[in-house]
Image (cartoon, rainbow, N blue to C red; front, top):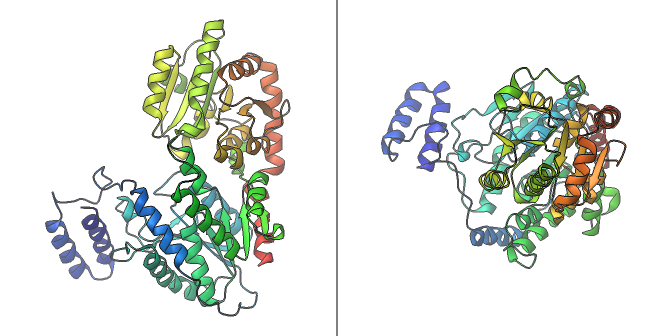
Length: 475
């Protein structure tokens, strides 16, 4: 089914070049597809997570493959950057794709000719029907690598990706190849770098093995999948000419793996300057969300995974209700934990509004409803290391942030100045902190304004992307 949909999508793309042949091919493929597969997003064609045993076998294959010989580095020249990413706008709207897009925009505004390349088969392999080889979004060119069928073997997939992307390298003549998490994107960029004598920068936006560890209590650091993923990611960092990451906690982790400190550059998360403008009027949004009365509104925009700690926030709201200091929770986003969180809120009698995912352009309307933005992340390793984007967007709008007191979040929240920190996974500590800030309008305003000024000075995309020039120069 999924294979037929993928092939139909490619056939439709060929209509522009050879309408007769392509349309005949598409008809044959549809006829052969079970139930007449269609090119719309369907639950039947969205890929399911693969078996961890197969993923582990793939990691072994990738680790067993020796690097190819490297051509001599070409001399410096040109202003073209070729980025390799997993997914992208407009098909996928997430913190990862927003950062990719804003960085590419800021680099282009600064005079670089940045192009973005998505992973092999995307977006058709995800059940999407957009088979265009190139899509321009806000002036940023996104290129797709679309073979007739992506190889199942990961080593062959890297080689096929490098073959297709090699045509772009020859056409665009980039000065640098910039791969973004994960190790597969790095493998493609490194293979191209070796073939064409080009420097490679690997941007580590998270630690894949730690994200996997945090999503199931049955997972362990002794599991082979964890160990091999960590080893492969570390190898890609070592092979790259320079490494970029999001914060000091992440930089220290990378250096602890043996990557030379002088090779690592921090380029933190930032915001588009429009986020610094006054928040829009939410209009009738409060009414439509069922938010009435004078209770402060506390919320977040997030993916609903266990490590985000949203259960702690719900438990804290229940404690506040029992104290006679209720808050309304506005929880914007979706994810595997949403059903359990909705049941938890109902069981505790907490007024919690779950919106599901909202369009990127609507996020600030939801910010305008909030009095406090919460980041109740657990003390998991992934939360201690990786700095999130969403609270910085809220701070840009002048919303005070309360966050769990873990190392990565200390990098963006200065207690008593730009926000507040409290004990992770402790509902009573969260309730105390929320009551102290949510019910103090003057303090909220003062902290929110300081947060906005900090973002304006240090965390716009225009400000942070200067760091890439350092990383590119290292190479």
